[in-house]
Length: 115
Image 1 (spheres, rainbow, N blue to C red):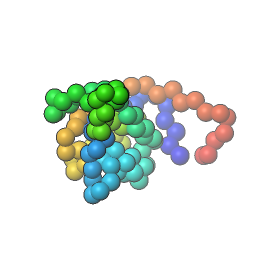
Image 2 (tube, rainbow, N blue to C red):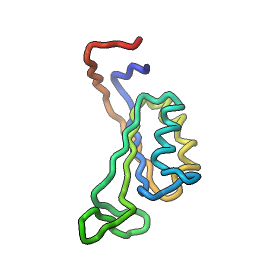
Image 3 (cartoon, rainbow, N blue to C red):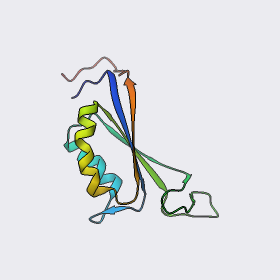
């Protein structure tokens, strides 16, 4: 397990919920590849409303019933590891956006260690 504390880079990848990679949700493939690459962790968040490249507003409000909600995948690791992962996104993110932000990690544990 990677122990990550201190300066890091947060990568947020914005895609549509319906975006696909070989008949699989693009967000699921991104998480799978991040895990395979040994990155510290990844989380997927489904938006309740948003718009992107298409300029169409997607919303989860009952009357709109949009099926292509915005999705954000957040991955935090060292800058070197995040930047090394970026080329994989070139083939996975057709219409979307990647945001990189410096951050500081303070890792909390329950006292158990796996090292």
